[in-house]
Amino acid sequence: MKKPLLYLISAVIGVFSFVSCNSPKAPAQEEQTGETVSQTNVIPSVADGSIVYVNLDSLTQNYLLTKDLTTELEEKVKKLDAELANKQKKFQADVSDFQNKAQKGLETRAKLEEIGESLANEERNLMQLAERYRMEMAEEQAVMQRKIIQAIMDYLKEYNKDKGYKFILGDTFDAKILYADPSLDITASVLEGINAKYKAQNPVSTKK
Image (cartoon, rainbow, N blue to C red; front, side):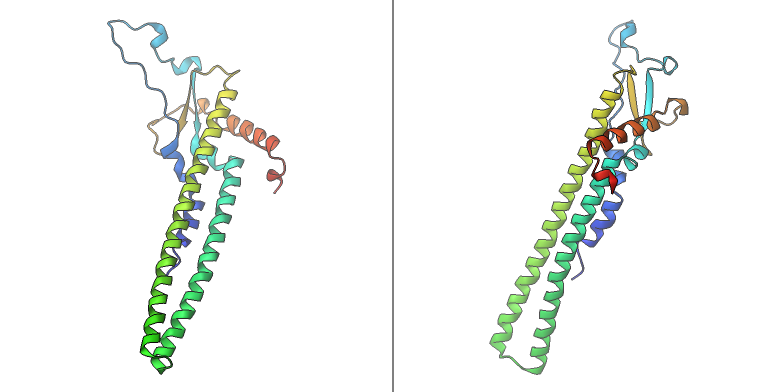
């Protein structure tokens, strides 16, 4: 049997790719229902400074919470992978012993059938265990993604209290924002603030 969990480590290391499918979407402009549209229903122009954006790929990759949660998840994956590998190693040893006894006629046919059936059950149990571990880690990763996005959204509410932006857009590699003036990019400012807040709340964790 191959190690079913090994691919999860690479998936965890590449966790930052989730941002594009979980990024907050920019609010759409309200549909015009009459011949005229009031000024309050018009999306503010870029010129008045009401619209800014953050690069979510860069923000999440450099967010200390992301790094800490990714490290925790990697450790869990490695632990489960090692546990499964030990069980598989024992199984392979049992299979080799069975084959040796069968080839040398060291057990009766009935006994060999009994051992063979037991090994088949053990193999099925290992496959089920590997699948359970895979599902557990997938769920852990999904929860981690939600925690990161929620933390960013919560911080942006605080950040915007004294900024007064009407819209803070999320820019990612496959986002619909095809061009944006670099002067409207507030990623660095948000990253500095959100990491400062995280350090203040997790002084022990950030000293690693």
